[in-house]
Image 1 (cartoon, rainbow, N blue to C red):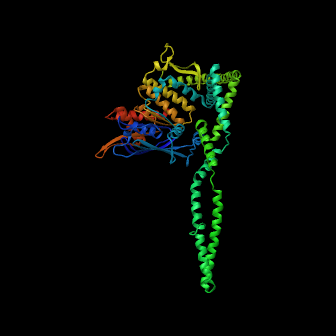
Image 2: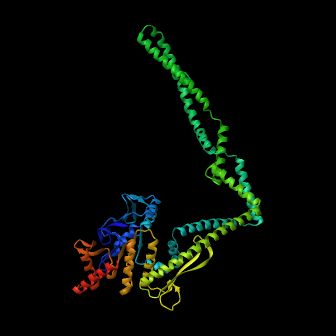
Image 3: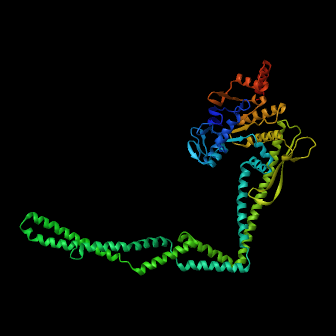
Length: 557
């Protein structure tokens, strides 16, 4: 259930904090007080789109935070599939709105909008002011039947979707294989050319990397050899080399070293330097011989690398991809070489895929019709509870001309609102107020199947009054026994059923206008009912009527 709502800098709201309760939570207030802004903020936290003017004038950002208490095992499992895990039994969804962008978080961790919406779907069902209009679109009716069908129907629907994917692939493959003899000959000739070109190159896996490394070394070897040669010349060749200069210096010190102990030590150090230099020159000479560049070898390496890169440009980004492409082309060539048998195999595969799709689609259709009949009966009962006298409601099925990922069923809601009237499509019969009640009846039926903990209704009472309003209030209270319900209403009959009653108020001051919300006591709730009933002037008689409504509501609940 939705435990709390925190809203900051949204339209008329400076900052509010709401602690919701179990059962039926009712929100009332004067027209324009900001009731829809509060529920709209919940929608924004759940991932709905927004415009920059929703942010309060003068504020840099808007912020909405929802805290859900998660105790249901099905909800916990659904969240776990999204790698979301309750912390101390709660899940926190938040969204920070800025001009041009927003940041969404779950339990403090930044998430994508898709993940936010998936999590919201498991936690809450938001019925906006115009959602009942979705009933006007025939394409939406199938979704209600499938949702009512539960896990068994979902599994079968998944099989249909998988079979349809295989069927589409088989049909596409057969269509692409259709070619005349001349085209087939051209295709075979082209395949043979590509295969021969790749095989003639005799590529080895990893060869491209080896060639690139070798080529870089060869390309730099000339500079390396030049440097080594210069160093060798300075240290060991010619009269001016370091080696020759050391030899002359050693000869000059050799006689003096016999007479002076210090000179003798210096002579020894110089002799050691000469020995080290000779070792260095030998090592340098040996390495120079290894670095000698063969122009022929360099040319061959360069040509081989060019050939590999040319093939990579045509057939793949690596030798592995080129060889894999070659194998694919060989398979295509083999199929075209045995074309008639190949086409027969494709036709057989298509027939098998279509047979499987047809079988699963028929099974799905049978289950849907069974569930649709049950759903239609329950919706009809719900409509009778909502003061539709002598109503008839059916879910009609017809078969599509072709298969789809959803199966073969075309579903439409049909209704008769008056005795003697024929069943007609819902879209051509119901008014706005009637659609609102029909959607409520559907929501009530789906609530028994739905594991969503919280249901939100924004002005479900549009277009109704009197006895019908009373029936709607009783239905809302019934849903509130199994689910947390949050509802905005203008009707006293519905507000009287509240388990928790909130008043939304707009206040003006020198600093500006702002919307606030507060929880009402039993006495305050009766006064608010009296305001709804009596308007600007609340008489004792009106207040008495409000209290009687509260008492009657307690008896009904």
